Image 1 (spheres, rainbow, N blue to C red):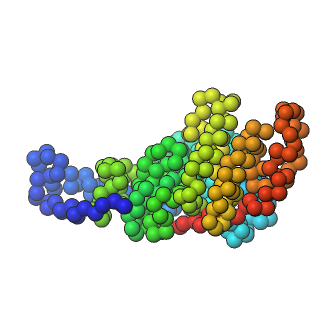
Image 2 (image 1 turned 180 degrees about the vertical axis):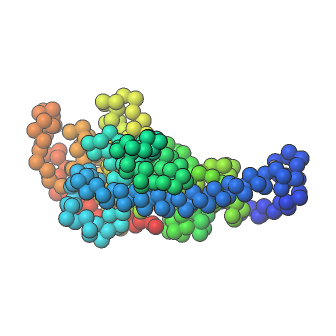
Image 3 (image 1 turned 90 degrees about the horizontal axis):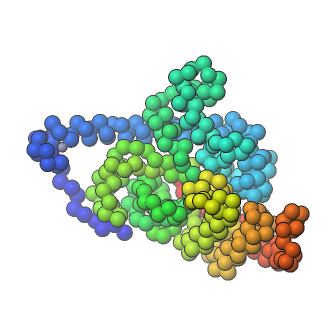
Length: 359
Ligand SMILES: [Zn+2]
């Protein structure tokens, strides 16, 4: 927990500015900070409306759903079940639609958010038909600013490092170790230190919204006043801290696998190309009290699955799949019985909701 600090003394307008310029506060940083505060408020509002517009845009591309569902839920759900996804999985529909918007590549080389951001750049050419979606969708300049930043956002795991009760969290990206401040009051009340949020953290530029309000010293002693605050876009899955190691190991296997064809692949490439497997990991987790042996199995099965087919994770959650002829051919010295789907442990791994999501 961050240690509490005496609340910063309020600077009077006629006091010397805190920056040491020698000028009065009201003639130096006060107006700058006023402008920043106003901007932050507008960006804060824009993040709500922009996210709603993005989700609306996703819902307007139902032709993408079958293959996106297959990728995200490993074929567990059909288009007909879309309406029930929120019941079948904790806020499953919201998590899915958010992933489709930010991560799903489909047969396009770009995500929806990337395409929307790209069409902003050609907005000056208003007659351009390809620009129509974003230029009509996002007209507010604050939303446009956010949209440009959000094209880099992907589904990622974030470890809760510090709690600002009622305000938010300091989180660390499990892969890159990057630290950021997440403004999410609900998460600050529900998440414990060390627990993982698997979600989309969208940056909202401007002054940090968290620390100044309560005068709490930021984690890592960083000055966060000029860093963006992050918000949770859509729902997030919530993973208990005892699975951290396995999640990292699981993802490392995928990164290693990626490097077979892309030797220079980084975590960035992994989340760009395979963020959906993070949901497969969540699906494979048991609902209550993770059994360490199940966690170990998840990792083992991933190891086996990646060696066998180079990509298929269907074994991971214990579903029977017809053997892939090509994979078998490549596998002459691996006995068939290694296929985890045949071991009888599959039932233990029936995908369950381990995802207690936050708002
Ligand atoms: Zn100043």
